[in-house]
Image (tube, rainbow, N blue to C red; front, side):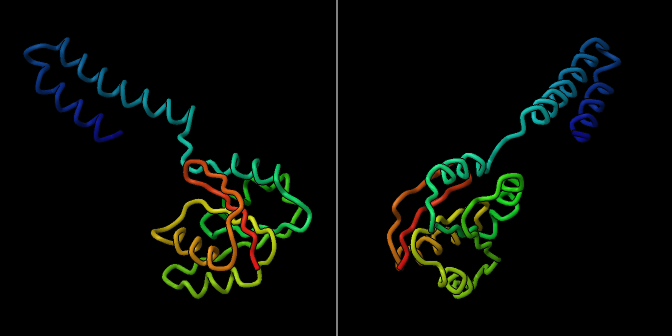
Length: 157
């Protein structure tokens, strides 16, 4: 934003001697457009990870005996969206094992039965690696996907 303002000021300085009205218009348009865009982003922040709607769908399909595994990238948002209304099933929070598939395999190993796997904010190919590991242990019975977030219901052996 400051660079836009500085650029507008430089253009206005160059044009002021020949056409002061145009110089003022340039400053008003460049600074005003940037300010408007900033204000719009503050009023309606972009949602890139729609985990709240994924969790709402998961809540509606939870059964007694289900469990939940939360991929480490989703843990902060998961904690935020469940702070006032915890899920009524056991939840395992993942930890980062970037570049270490064995670490993820060890986290997933104790999970059995109907397991909801919740992901968001994934890194590189970790989502694919998780799905491959899970597909090797069971089948995906349901997928809930939103921009930047997903939940998969697995029947794990």
